[in-house]
Length: 84
Image (cartoon, rainbow, N blue to C red; front, side):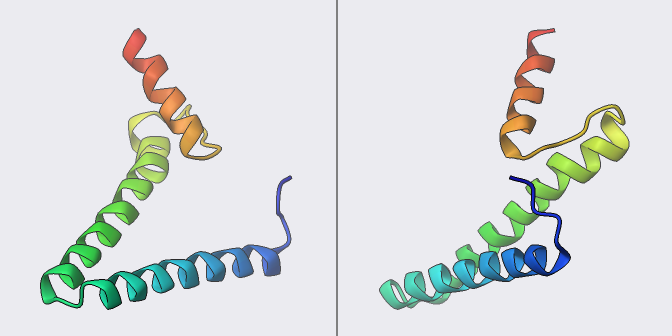
């Protein structure tokens, strides 16, 4: 099912943000150190950059013919390129 309603899209984004914040809070409650907080910040930043790369950079710069449909389609794209 494709969600096209802008309000539902923003709600979905908000729910992802809340889920990430909840996970971060729970991890920091379990291990409340500066090192853990720093590692959470790094994994969050690196994951966002990897997602941006997988879709925006590849689609607009590396392979303009590629159109993404999610992380699964990106993995299939990489596997197909590797076989060539």
